[in-house]
Length: 113
Image (tube, rainbow, N blue to C red):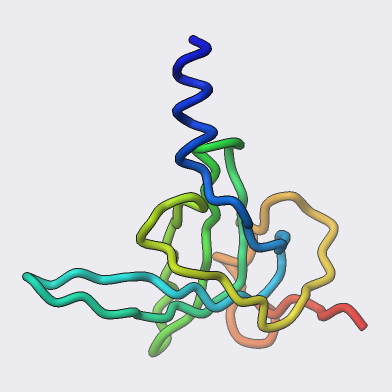
């Protein structure tokens, strides 16, 4: 069991971005297509953070062309290049799953000042 913990510590990223639930983030993801790879950005609101340690994931939601799109990103994955915080949100919940039912302005999160 100790060997697994040591391996997990080695594969974790040294500096993880500081963001919380409700923040609007821009995630830079490395996409590999055949032999070529490129960076694709996905911008949206963080609605959930789960687990901890090496398995930590976060869910980002955005509305594209009237359709809600959610992606789950592993925080310590090598395919996630970096996470930029666009703006900080002010929320009082740990999970923002209720935003799935909201449309338009009602789906916005208040920003911190």
